Length: 118
Length: 113
Image 1: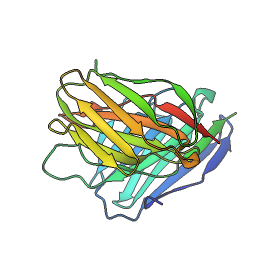
Image 2: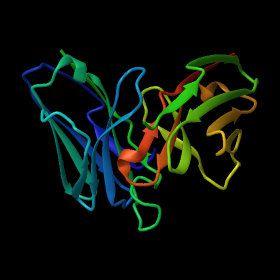
Image 3: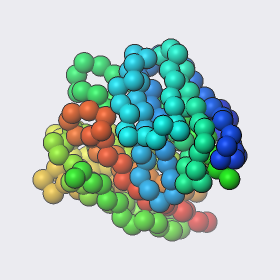
Image 4: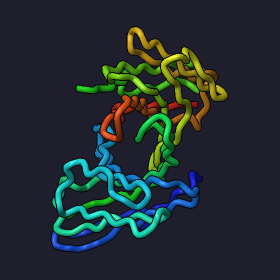
C-alpha cells in the first residue's frame, strides 16, 4: 500500500445526486491532489492543495468542489454530474520542498474511486 | 504545447521474455521524467525518476533510459513475470509548477504464460 487511502472505491450516482469522495494520506505530506483518469486519456490534474491552501484549479467545472480541512484529508464534493464525468478519480500526495519547484516531487497515489454517473 | 507520447499502446508478451516501452516528449524546460506502473484498479506507483544528467536508472528488473538530446526515454523489462501485467505511464515534468507535469496515455502490457 502507498499510504494513501480513498473511499468509496466504487460509486454509482444519478445526475441529480450529491456525493463526496474522501482521501486520507498517512505519510505526513504537505500537498494533496485530485486527478481524473478517463479511458485512453492521460491523467488530468484537477486540484492541488499545498499546506491546506488550494494552489491549482485546472479549469474544473463547478459541479466538482474540493475541500481540504487539514493536510491529511482531502474531499471532492460532487453534484449535478454528467455521464461524461464517469471516470477513475485518483488522489495523490507529496512532500513539497523549496528546491525543484512545485510538481517536482514524487506523488504517491491512492487506489482511486471508480465513479459511474447514470 | 507540452506532450508525452508512448508506444506501443498495448503489448502482449510471453512470460520470461524481455520488452521495451518507449516514451517521446516535447516538454520544455525539462526537469525530470518518471515511469509509473499502474495495476488494474489501483493507483500508479513510481518505478524510476531521472533528471537531465542521468542516462539510465534501474529498479530490479526495470531499467529506464533517458536521452535528453532526442527527448526520448525507454523502459526495459527483463525476464517478464505475470505480475508485470499493468499499464506503464511516462510522466515528464517541466520547471514551473503543477501545470507543467505532463502524463502520457500509457502502454498496457499483458504478460501471458
